Amino acid sequence: MESNVTTHPLLSKERFGGNDLWGVTPQPDQPIVDELQRASRELAHRGGGLLHWWVTAPSAEHEQIAEAAGFVPHRRLHRMERPLPVTDESYDLNWRPFQPGADDAAWLEVNRRSFSNHPIQGTMVQEDLDRAKADSAFNPEGG
Image (cartoon, rainbow, N blue to C red; front, side):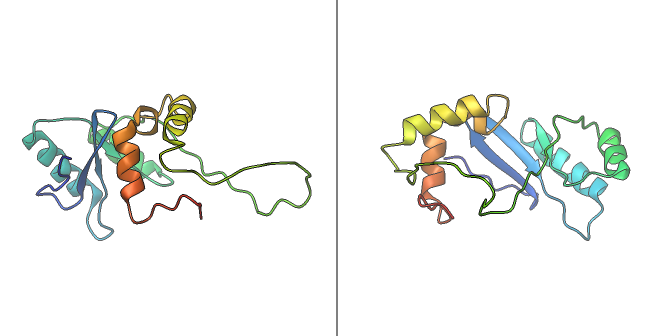
């Protein structure tokens, strides 16, 4: 497995489906322009690649900074919520928790089809799923 350690403390690298994905997470007290420039230089020093900057609720200022730094919008994410449990609807749903090993191939297929246009989820392979299952946060029961 490749290391994601860089000389830039806020630049991270992940490998999914054979693709290297780089991301930058700026510190709250550091001007974002400085962080983007540092991350870009670090990535260029490592041979280049595609740098992602994730912004929650981007403002006009974020968009100006992104344009000045050469970033272009790739997609917009929307957070969708609803209160649970659902008490005003009746439905019959049978389910069981994910069973590691037994459900891997089916899960990967559904995930690939569901997220075919997503750069990470749509390209996941068994190695990526194994890495996720090995993470201490993984809970096959959900929750």
